[in-house]
Image (tube, rainbow, N blue to C red; front, side):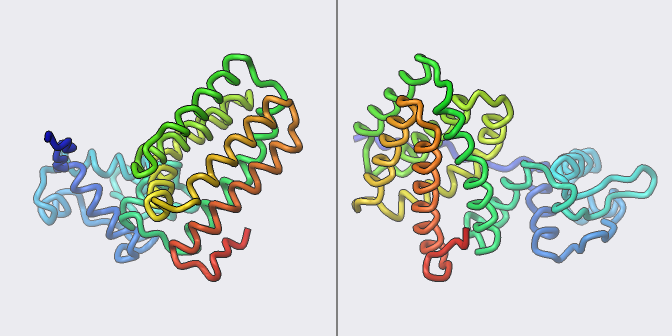
Length: 250
């Protein structure tokens, strides 16, 4: 029997620099406002060329982790005031998927705030094409291998992405798309933790209820179902990550 393996991924020197500097900044070893060593010296310490290091610093600046000041050098930024959505992926990578409770709660609160609204809007003016896509996803959920956590996470993301698109708001889908690496990381762990039990079926049951509410043009019901579904997932996620009584404090 052939075994399907994913290609081995080797970090480039630039990616290795980014990873190392992110780790130093996010761990607090490099403090907010602290100046990084001059590029020539920092490149020597990391064992890379100055052009490679400079590209890495530009990437970190784009994420809001450092600020590059001409003729003065690079300084560690406070990502809470300068970070972009790309910072979410950096935080997940640094923690290797292990999220602390405050960070996880922040993610769950953001989802609750945004996605209840996307569900409400989706139930106001869904197109026939979008309703057909919803039913296609529901059909795929019935057929998907319940032991494949990655496939489950991808389907779940597609469902929430379609709701954002059906909202008619041009910005919500872009936020959802930017959030995908973090989103699928969390949901993959969620589904993997619950392989073989009834929680996955509960999630898909929420999906079917939500599609019915959207098809019935019932914004209030769609909002209520989305809220209940997100709180359901949050409780389980907080229990997986060691939250107190599985309560996300939402």
